[in-house]
Image (cartoon, rainbow, N blue to C red):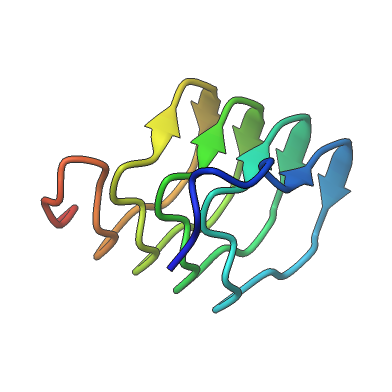
Length: 89
């Protein structure tokens, strides 16, 4: 589990056709541009998604307690645990 008292790790800049599938990115700040990036099955609990996300795959990711305040176009959330704890259908 991530520690909210630590300075957040950052994933920023331009990311194109990269896979972070099944990585532990809990508490990370995701800012910048993400195009065709794979976050399937990632632990993104408590993360901040504040970038531009185009064609990104968040299927079955854990987004509980995440802050989602970015621009999303053509993204996939099927099966993901959303910030409120519900599962996206």
